[in-house]
Image 1: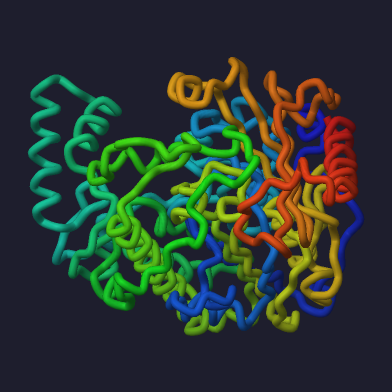
Image 2: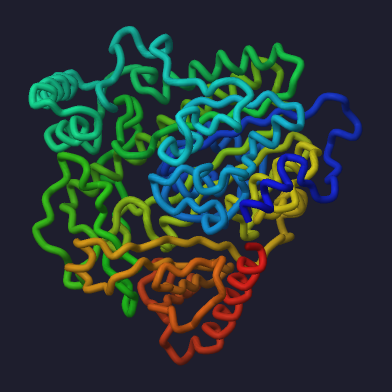
Length: 536
């Protein structure tokens, strides 16, 4: 695959898709908005509690993909897939430490391709996961050096945050423990870990302006960059990444005040699904990096998940909603800037959240699973000449690359795993694929081995989602879809019926009444795996 992509290079193309450019000289601009850990808790997705007027405003201009799924429910791998239009087994990125171009040096990124099409490509904030790209945040992707957080845009009232925090008492403790750690000779990660064990709250409600935090400052910087781009003769691809609502859930007080703590919705099902394998779960290790999370007193009878006091659950959910509304306000700055510069009618806008997030369902928090709450993620695409709509057609993040090429009227690289969603945007009743695919690895680390008794070896769960069902196969011995399928490597299987069981309470893979469904879903996943071997 590496050789294939390298040989195709930026010139790799498949039949030209004629867009709106045939009748106009100027190419369409692209505003590319990434939001970290944003699940589809948005007004435009039907949530009645959340306040997201700006994202909802964008949705009224474009297509809302109601059944959109990520490739892997963790930041680095899913962003590597989205930015290259390739599945994780082809990018070679399944974790938060592998550098994409170390394992796949010839891979072609979306903004890199648009550079070859005469675009100015620029970026700010979290677009790639920085742990999975080079120090230049994937240098080949950008026509100018990537913009870093700038003190110029941080509130002069508060000054820079310490870590992610602005409350004075937290900042004082942060400085105290940093000095202690430095006195012990700690540096780098060791120093960061030392501080985090002592002071790293999972939430913060501070009465500060939006630009007291990096997202608010970056939104102001992005506004200035857009102004400069509007004066250039080149079309632009401008990527803006927002970090919230990723942990810690920090946001100015006015966004917390939009919600009442006692109205925060607890999930209706907080147990392990009946008949489901332990491989499907985790123990919320990401959340346990925060100093105010109660210690594990005991696991549930199923030995999975995280038991959390109701009060703390509601505080976290409150924080998630507040952080979501905070990011929505920053999106509003971008939309208002486009309007004020007269760019809206000549700009394609795409907004995505890199994956979903568990807020206590299945007794789970964070992401890192193949369940619905982790894999389902928002995707909005606005093209000024296409009528707004809402579609239930399956879509995946790997579809963004070919879709933007199609919308911009440029050739689509031939090797991409995704498909253009333009036919769906023009007719929301159409579909370009039968199902979406996600995957997640499990490694038998010491804690999991002791808790669940897993055998040694790495597992990968491949999950396909149709309109009604999800079917997941857990494969052992480091199986990847680029290798021939071997049924002897099946460790476990899951089947969920969302018409009857939207909360995934029962794995029905072993139930007699679902035998035909199981057979059909098994055929689908085997056909998919076969196509991946052929592509390798």
